[in-house]
Image: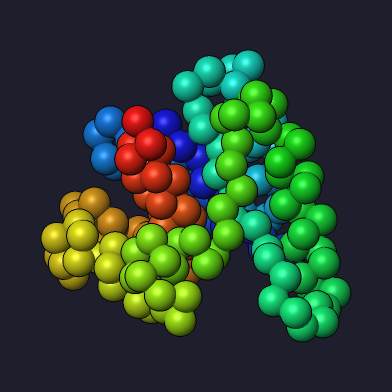
Length: 157
């Protein structure tokens, strides 16, 4: 099971991905304090088979603003809150996700979303009863993080 987080300044998206069933077990967008509680509840002390993946912000040579700094602050808090071992946690950069799914760093969120929809059976997968039903907004990024991590891990083994 993978718990993937797309962090934000005030709210963050989370997604639980079952790697064996290739299925979303749970997902949502919550206030950061609520995500922090979720992470504390899901640490590896309670659920030893969970892996934690979070999107990390990378420097692109430009100045950053207050909101980016606040998001980085939350990434650190989320990282510490998940009580798993170091090997059970991974920071994934957006560039890595873009290359994994689209083969170029110029890919947009819309490009990645379309790849995910195509992979799971087209637009029907987003309709009621489909595997991607209910995925919206930043949850798409959390799903991309989970799949990128799962597929990289699978290829290493």
